[in-house]
Image 1 (cartoon, one colour):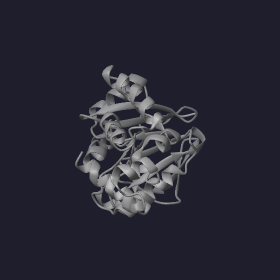
Image 2: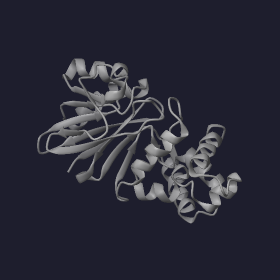
Image 3: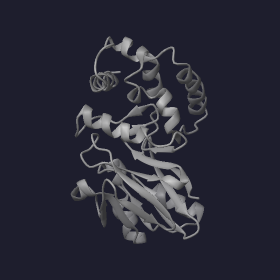
Image 4: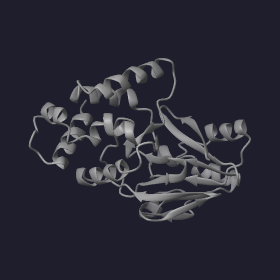
Length: 254
């Protein structure tokens, strides 16, 4: 089984140190900056072999080159955005697989936050790295895509098994949850979750990973069919993409 360690970076980013112990393969997912990664490698006595990028934004790739220069790690990122991934060695896209030591990840194209955004799903380890497409109770802004694209991307992730752990790019859960409650104030699963989120954040603890099952119950961006959410938006009879688009618009201005 993979050992996955959260590596806080910048103000609210998470990179993830992933260790496959049987082969000693070690990856860092979305390194914003190099110093916290070097510190984590030293703490866990690991040697970096791979750098995995979900998308091109600097707060997910800023550590690529210094990490590669010192360790020789292979940089793997989205094929559709290879020209914007610093130091990339291998581009992957929908349907590709990544062999990582004795573990295997399936790659999904999940665009909209950026035009070339991918997820890495380690099925046997029940873990998916979603970058800035799916957050805990949230989703990324539509910088380079459309509401229909983002809904398609999120729907793809939502079909994964409910016990799949979701490792996303930022600690946005508290603000995302407050927005979710504004649309579904009577969602009992959401209210229960927010009690735990507020406790964790008050104690300085991360709220990640979440799970696909928990997101289906509480993430408004996966819930455009919710009667309560539709009523809050005044869109009881609208199609799902229109409801999703309005939800994203309101979050942009929340």
